[in-house]
Amino acid sequence: MFKKKKKVIAKAARNLVVEIEPKSSIAEQFRTLRSNIKFSKAEDELRTLLITSALPSEGKSTVSANLACLFASEGKKVLFIDADMRKPTVQYTFRLFNTTGLSNVLSKQAELIEVINDKVGIENLHVITSGPVPPNPSELLGSIAFERLLVEAKEHYDIIVFDAPPTLSVTDAQIIANRVDGTILVIDTQYTERKAPEKAMELLRTAEAQLLGAVMNNISTSKNDSYYYNNYYANAYGEEEDKT
Image (cartoon, rainbow, N blue to C red; front, side):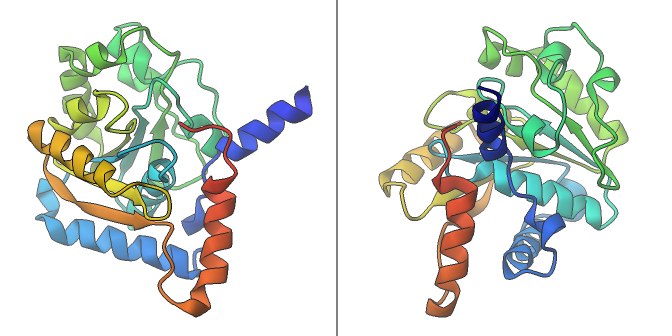
């Protein structure tokens, strides 16, 4: 039983490739993504960033975690928040306990400073896990408490990165997208039907999200790269039992 649980946790953890393999081509692509995000807006205008996808298991948690690491690596003080209170995974990626987190702050059971994990082993990066699963995630994210969290977090951090649930599954991502400076949509090019991202972007526009663009995930740029990329992403997503 313990071996099975350990295996599930290992699969739920996202690969921090920018930390594990900083010189790899995939890490370089993450750096390119970071640059494109920075160029999309004036630097002082992008303080809050949301990463979502149309459907589960498209790679949004991996993209958001690696981006948070990269922003921290260039000296920015970064707060990475797991806003997927329905099926969280950030605690696995950073090997944290998830006894308290975002849901505790939004339900006024804890102060922001009490749930921040500042010892994740990456300089300038602090992490908030989702906390216990609440019965009403959408209501909590749409509350005044979430607005207050944003204001307080901006006082202490240069950029706040949110990992949100899939847009077509629940309304949580739309609610957050309406309140942040920029939103990125992650698309799995191998498995996602074309209409799903279109529907997700339509919903995000309805929420008046500031759409910065899309990340095309699980794609090979050349024949020579295909073996490496296909195997990397198979390990990262393809064998997941946890579908977010």
